[in-house]
Length: 514
Image (cartoon, rainbow, N blue to C red; front, side, top):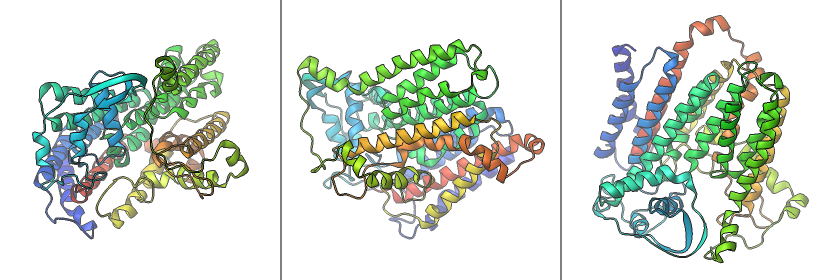
């Protein structure tokens, strides 16, 4: 990569960092907070310095650095607890960091209470940051947690990266703030490593993986106390394996099947319904298998995977049966609960939710700001109609570009099954949320609350593979010319990801104020 090209990218990125405020009609300050500005500049310099353009084989490594630098920047710039569900996942993180594999009847976490003092989203009495960061937060010291009573469940190990960062912060310093930000950063590191691995596995699908893995919507959720880092990582791995399986005849080895089964089984931790993706290899033509007997072996092994996942789903009930423990009562929004028989007789709330939140997930992910939660940023003081208008257009253009460049083809039978599988998974998620105490559904309501576009990430990630055939008919490309432009196109995608992330990082710098 030429020095002039790096300098050009750096200059454009810095300009974007400062002029993005012009796209927002109301901002707290015309000059950015100095701490956040410094972090943003370090992020830009770091990612441009590490970028190696001109060689498509460097795509996985470059993607790692894009995610790493922007993810760390987001982790530091985002105000305390301004991530989705961070208040819940922080509790789980502290438990794991304290070595508590099991959840117990009573717990006291002074460190969680310390963080809550600065959670201006959920705590009206919280201390607001005057200069980008709550100053007192950096003087608060760790206090030991206490856990007592009988065991009532197993902690979700999806949050191990968060817990590892928190633990290192506890060991190296007494400051809660250091552990807090390290917890977020370690989530980013784990995600970046998994994305890099997925791109090395799914080489024929890596441009699609880049688009969805490094898009701001994903990064702003991952850079939190949030187990969706694992959900996104596993989704990328699943598509990487599927595209590897169909890349050429006799390409499926038993080793790959084992790794794929482990990947889909791990879905039981972040999003249980997606363990059903484990059946996909059974619908891939036998011509792709080195040994057809491996397909039979896989089918038998899949039963074991499902049993393990069901065991995890029921783990809280099983643990309480053994320990005789009882879970604390939780408040609920459900006053008139609907069962499955109700929805069979009255399917319209599920159909309406499916159309709005599943079919509408593409619009939500692309940054239209019409989704639940808003994307790519959540909890901003003021939105930018310009950015929420232009971002979906840019994403759609890049989506079409990576789709028509896919050189592998999925069999019609496999496509049909995947569509049916995603329909079943989507309906299962919607029904599950109808009984969720936090959101739930009461008989008579028009739709089911709490269904979010991020739950359907694997579906969005599969669309280029599913739509590749008809899109290539509409937009034919010259295969020879495309091969000659391989590096130029991958460079364009990477530079686009940098500019898009700088744009949203800048928007967050101006509008995310605690």
